[in-house]
Image (cartoon, rainbow, N blue to C red; front, side, top):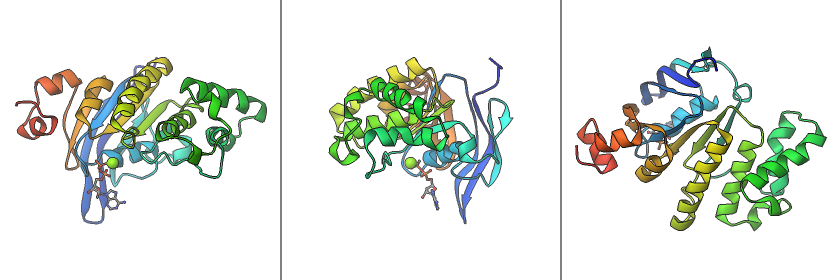
Length: 241
Ligand code: ADP
Ligand code: MG
C-alpha cells in the first residue's frame, strides 16, 4: 500500500462553451472505497466520471490516481472499467463476445480469454447465457452482462454511471444488494453515480453531494443524512437541516 489516495481531483473545472459543468471540484477517494456521487440531474456527476475515465479532459485542474498525475493520460491507459446507464452492449455480438471484447482489445492471449470470460460471467450469475445476443436478455441480464464486461479485465478503478436506473423497482433492489457484495468480493475502488438518495445511503462508504457543478458536502451517508450542511442538501436528501 503506497498510502496515496486512489483518486484525487484537484481544482477540476470543466467548461462547455459558456457553461461550467464543473466549477472547481476537490475530493479524494481511498483505495477499496465505495464512493457515491449523489446529486440531482445536471449537477455534474457524469461529467466527473467521464473525466475520471479519461473520456473527457478538464478545462482546469488535475486528476491523480495513486499519486500519479493522469490528467493527460488517454482512457485506454488509465486502468479503469466503466458501466454506462445504457449498458452500451454490442447488439450483434453474443454475451460471451461482449464480455471478451475488452480482453481482445488488451491483446490478452486467446487461451486466457475463455476462462476469464467464464469467471466474470459466473460472478454475476450469467454463466449460462454466454451464447445469447443482448436482445434476447432481460434488462437485469443485460445489466449483468455490462458488469461482467467491466470486471473481466480486473481494472483498478470501477466507474458506474446510474447502472440500475433502467431496472424496475424490485430488480433494482435485488441488484443493488448483489452489486455491493460483488464490490466487497473484488475489493476494487468504486465510484458510483446516482441521483437516488437511498442507493447512496445503502451502497456507499462515503459520498459527495453535487449541486450545480460543485460538491456541497462530503461524508459518510450517515453523517450527511444526519447532518446535512445546508438547506440545499437537506432539501435534496429529504432530511431536516
Ligand atoms: P449529471 O450527470 O449530474 O446529470 P452532467 O455531468 O451530465 O450532469 O451535466 C452537467 C451539466 O453539463 C449539465 O448542465 C449538462 O447539460 C452539461 N453538459 C454535459 N455534457 C455536455 C456537453 N458535452 N456539452 C454541453 N453541455 C454539457
Ligand atoms: Mg448523468
